[in-house]
Length: 221
Ligand code: C5P
Image 1 (cartoon, rainbow, N blue to C red):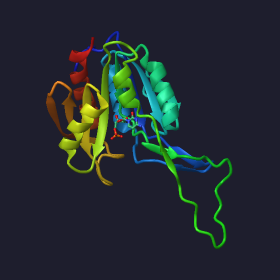
Image 2 (image 1 turned 90 degrees about the vertical axis):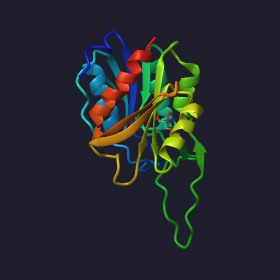
Image 3 (image 1 turned 45 degrees about the vertical axis):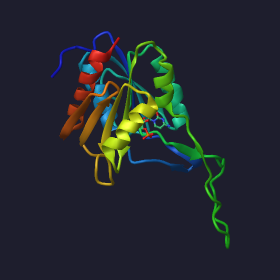
Image 4 (image 1 turned 90 degrees about the horizontal axis):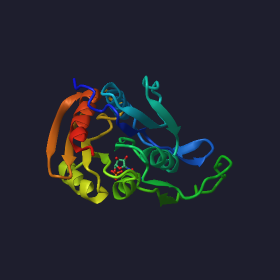
């Protein structure tokens, strides 16, 4: 394993999946467990970094020596990540952030009405936090890393997404109901904006996390 090559660095990692409420008891969510983000937090701490972990709806214990900020929605996650990113050397967006949220929040539980069809759920876009941080770089020279879960044309979609988001590194993995989400293992390709592509064979999420830091370290300011 690597030495303390992140000593003196502050890294911000988002993990888990946002939940976008419809009413006090229901939400739109996703299958992210947070395990990959937590693995990134543990490995960064082991390599000497000061770590802020912004955790969205995870059921995992706080990693030792890591500053954990808990959030629910994409809007809350954006606030927490932007706040922590102002002095961060690297920002890694491993969270599954909902692209859309319900346009309206019902303050009381939505009820079914006898003989009536349900009202359609209208969605609005959430802010794209990764694109925003990549464009604005709250701290000059910071390294920004995104994750992309793709079900089809994984590499082609990943390369296009890396350009569209403007991040330095994009970790692309293939997902499906039985793949990646909630699993202890992952398989991915790390795409860099300078064209480098690193294939990561199937293995523990900790191993992928260390390979991500291996790519981040030489790009740090
Ligand atoms: O566009 P897509 O959701 O596939 O992009 C995935 C990457 O973008 C992840 O790193 C995720 O954390 C980030 N993201 C974001 N804000 C959003 C949607 C995704 O930061 N609203």
